[in-house]
View 1 (cartoon, helix red, strand yellow):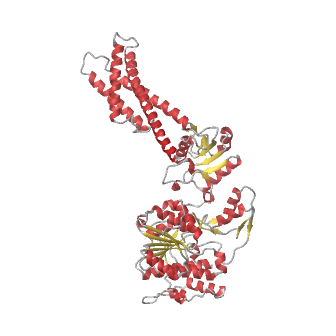
View 2: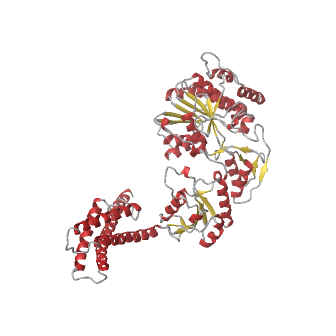
View 3: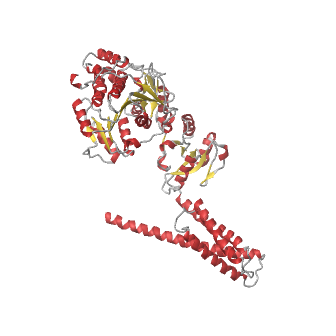
Length: 623
C-alpha cells in the first residue's frame, strides 16, 4: 500500500503539471489571437469596413508582432506562471498593465515613420480590443471553473445564509468552492436594505428577517445558517425561532473572535450552542493578550485534567513554553488531556505528573526537582453542595493543598491562583475555602520575591460541574430540569474566556491582589433552562427545588470593602486582598464536626489577621 500511494502521488503531480501546461498554451493562443483580431478590427473600423489593398496583411503582421511583444513582457512579469490567481483583480491589473505597455511600444515605433504600415490609432484601439478579448476569455474560463467547483446538487443540502457581511460572504464563497461540500447556497438574507438583490457568486439576497419563511418556501432550503459576525443573542434567538417555525434546521457560524487564526471554512458551521443564546457579552476578544512571557518558560499547571486546567494547557502550548508540566491526581483526566494535545496518550512522558495536593512532601519534592518558573494553580474541589456537607475535604484539598504548593514556591517567578466569584462575601464552604486561598496567596506575595496573585471569575459553561452540563444530562436522560429558584442568577463564562483571564492575570496582575473580570450582566438560570428545554427534541418540564445551604440568590463579584480599581484595562478589576498567616490554617481540624469546621473556615475567610514578624515556617507537619 505505501508503494502504491508513492506511485500515485507523482502521477497526480504530472497530471497537474500537464493541465497547467495545456492551460498556459491555451491562453497563449487566445492572447495571440486577441492581439491579431484586435488590430484587424481596429484597422477595419478605421477605414469604415473598406480596407485598402495590403492593409489586412500589414495589420496581421503588426498584430503578430504586438502579440509576441506582449508575451515577452508578460513572461518577464510572470503572468503565465501562476503568479496571480486566475481571474483575480491582481491578474486583471497585470494583463491591463502589460497591454498598455505593449500598445505604447508599438505606437512609439509607428510615430517616427511618415509612411506607417497601419494607422497610428491602431495600437490604441487594437490594444483596447485585445484587452477586452483576453479578459473575456479569462472570465469565461473562470466562470466555467467556478460552476464545476460548486457542490453537487444531488448530494448537498440546499441552505440559506442569513447575514451577507464579510463573514457571510466568506462562508458563501467557501461553500461554492467545495465540489464535495455538504451545503449548497440557494439564497441569502440580510436586513441591510442596500444589499437587497445583491448577488454574490450568483447567489441572490432575497430579503431580510421577515422574509425567512417566504425564502425557505421559494428555494426549498432545508437549513438556515446564521452568519452574522458577533451578533447579539437576541437576534440569534429571533432568527432561530423564525427558522424552526418553517421546519428548516438552524445552524450558526461561530463569532469572528473564534476564527481569528484561520480563514472561514464550511467546517466552521455548527449547531447552535447555549452560549450563543445566553444574551451576555463575551469580552474575551476585547482583552489584549501577549503570551510572550510564557515562551521558553518552565510552566506547571495543577489540576491540569479539569475543565480550566486542560484549556490552560492547550492555550499555554500555543505560546511555545520551554516545558509544560501537567499535574493531576486523576490518571484518566491526564490520559484524556494528553490525547487532546498530541493525538496520542502513551502516558510515558515527563510532562504528565500524577500527584495529590494532599501529599505535602510529594508536592514539595516535585516543585523542587522540576523547578517551574510559572505556576497556574487550578486544582481544587468545586462542588458547592458536596463541600457544604464535607467541609473537611475543602480544608485538606483547597486550603492545605494550596498551602502545600505555596510553601514550595520561594523561587517561582509567578503564581496564579484560580479562585471563584463565590469568594466575594462568601457564605458557603467553597467560598470560604477559596477566599482563604486568596489570602494565603497574598501572604506569599509579601514573603517571596515572585509575583503571587489570584483570579476570580464566575461559573464556566460546559465544564464538568456546570449547570449547562447538568441540564444537558437531564435532557438526555428524559428528566425534568431542576432549578433552585425562579430568580436565581449567575455570572457565566466560556472556558476560553476564563483561561484568557488567567493568562491576562499573569501579564498584568500585581502582587497579592485578585483580578476580577467584568462579565456584564448575570444570567437568570431559569431563562437558561427554558432555552435549553426549547432545544430539546421532546417536551422537558422545569422543576424548582429551592436554594440549598450555602447558595446565594445572586452572586457578587466584589466583596464588602473591596474597591473596583481598573488601572490597566477597563474590563479587569484589581482587588486588594488582606494576607492570612499560614499558621492560622495549620490548626484547622478537618475531622471535627462539620458545623465547627464551617465556623472556623468562615472566621478565617472574613477577618484580616496581621502578618507576623520574621520568617514563618509553614510546613504542614503540624497539621
